[in-house]
Amino acid sequence: MECLNQDALFVWLAASPSPRFEYQGHAFEAYQESAGTPSDSLFRMRLIYDDLSVESALAAWMLSLAKTLGLDVIYIAPIRRQVALHCIELALPLEPSGELLATFPNDLAECHLIRQALPKLSAPGLLVMDMDSTAIQIECIDELAAMAGVGEQVAAITERAMLGELDFEQSLRQRVAQLKGADASIIENLCERLPLMSGLEPMLAELKSHHWRLVVASGGFTPFVGHLKQLLSLDAAFANELVITDGRLVGEVMGKVVDAQFKADLIAACSADWQIPLGQRVAIGDGANDIPMVQAADFGIAFHAKPKLAAAADANIRRLDLRVLPYLLQY
Figure (spheres, rainbow, N blue to C red):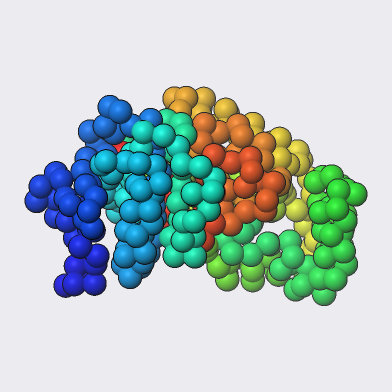
């Protein structure tokens, strides 16, 4: 019944009764992801969407693309994954201009340009995730501060850090100091209601089915990453350890601070421990503190990210949820 709402081009692509389809005066030729792109194709892009109703708009954009680039044939492949989104890949003889890409309907779908060899979903790999605003929907230290009654004070320190007046470790220690004397029970209370990021669980399930190693690395705190590790059956979790005495927060962290460089170093350390080959190491995060980690990975992904990280990453998930990630890998 789903095909009743689909554009004719996408109905043909899903059924693939023949390798070639004439659509509004243009020829489309299907290929399969597993077979590789046509020999004369130098550039690829993937269009990812969650609603079949946008397919007519995507088809219209592809026709405009073909006309502008002077293409006789548009090579197109269905990209199928376990997670419940939709994706097609276009193989082109040249890269579209920025002006042409700017006409893509970003409010309806995501367009991901592929300029490098992608990690293989079907082979073992490593995913290192940031926690706050990536694996979960909140910033844990902000929530703890609000529960401890010092939300405004912590927000002021965060603002100074964002202005570049404090480095990560300085801002972390100053914010944690504001929690001094708070009842440690607020940590357990927050653990019990951590809101997972939309799409996290199906994305992880798909990677697990292909024997990927899954790690969360956070500048936050160990109780929260430990909770996620157990809840989601992750392989490892790293974060900062809060000092607690007599059931109250001391306002300090102990041990080595998990900062941007620590998170970046985990890429090499974890891949060595688990013998993950080069090309199979992926990282995803949302903030500037994730830039070293994302750049240390073979394929770095920005998720609903701040501009600096978006500019540094290999891929940028702007609109949809974490289910996009498997579509950014090669089967």
